[in-house]
Image (cartoon, rainbow, N blue to C red):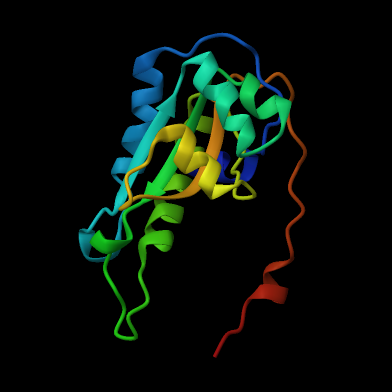
Length: 167
């Protein structure tokens, strides 16, 4: 798939077919995240692939939506803030790095014919408990991953002129 087609046509999907996903397909999606740039190449991330139905159901405590848990896979992106590059004012770039990697992941998933829906409105403490995260990891984003059962709604975007200043 052409990159521009992926960027223009990716949608947030909230309904998935129950079909299991081939491991090599999931691996290709994760490879896109792995190849993403990060500040000073620190790569302060770790990705959890939740395939087990009971584990996916447990994550409902963190994000209480049935459609989320019905996808055949859930990917949880965690930052390792202590490993991340810090700007001169000591601001960690861990979340920026995760966002770049997760965007690569969602575009790669779309190119593979899979759907995703970037989830940020979750309870971090529940994700931490469900995945038994070590103290040095912070959950940043989650997405269900699966074959779309619906096309998703076209996103509404502001015009370029409204979000750009040319100097």
